[in-house]
Image (tube, rainbow, N blue to C red; front, top):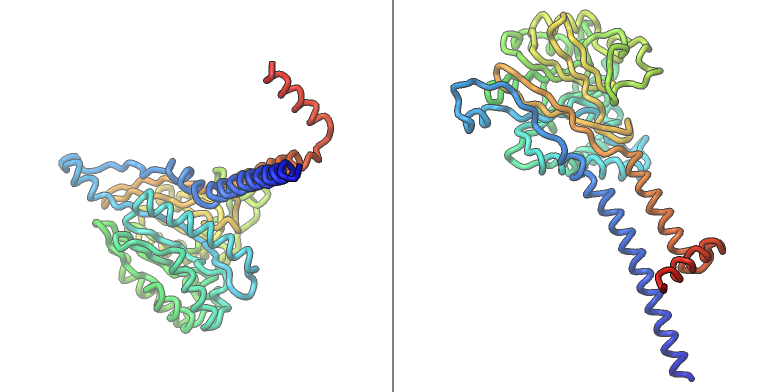
Length: 373
């Protein structure tokens, strides 16, 4: 009798252990998919766009002559003042996984981040700044074969009235950034612009920035900056990642939401760029300036700012370019998966403890009876 009771107890413990192991496996599988594999599943569907190339080149030469560039914006890494530790941990993990997966699958030649790398760069003291930089370098680490270029934004150094030489120098020291910096890769010229300094009030930083841009004006054919060029609002912007309908007709404030008309015209007159890329608004927009010069506003790369972050992939040659938008996993979809998994776990636990309502057991009994027949 005692041996039977002992055996039953052992079987019961084994059954419970097996059940707990199954639950653990389900939890682990859901976590692996939602926090790791989902980025591969989504980004694997993205591809480099085709671009026209010179007919006399061989296919190998043609492939080598195309610059594969990735553009993302407004990562807004949280700091010590406003950032809750859980929100910070979650958003930084998402961006790190998305960026590292994109590098692994797409292998770009160069990556541009179009400003507002940090959320509190304009406020942070030396210690907090050093910690932010350390975390950035971990998240956006990259192989030697891929270059990373970073443009300054208003959250990195402050708006014009907050901007100081000290903040500019510490940003330049980390990211090797100067306004009007010319980068040439595979015959394609890029100019990185400190749009915060295009205030037009003759301040020392502003005067230097404008003077350097004027010297480079004859070489520019592609421009990256944080502020968009002047436009009245986002009313003409379309697409699933454009601004919300109720926000599109809100007028933009010059020198705050967009560059001033004067600064915008200067850039267009000086450089006649064939492409302009900007960030700042956190939403997508495509605008034609003077009827022929396209500007692409790149949405935020952070899930803190939108449910559907994305980045731009560009295939660029000295004579042509083609762009493709790669969307990242929808946060709402990931949350839905977690909710479904949580509900399933709850049902399994209740069923195991025999706490479900009688109709469930009646249905279960019918299924067993049917199998027996």
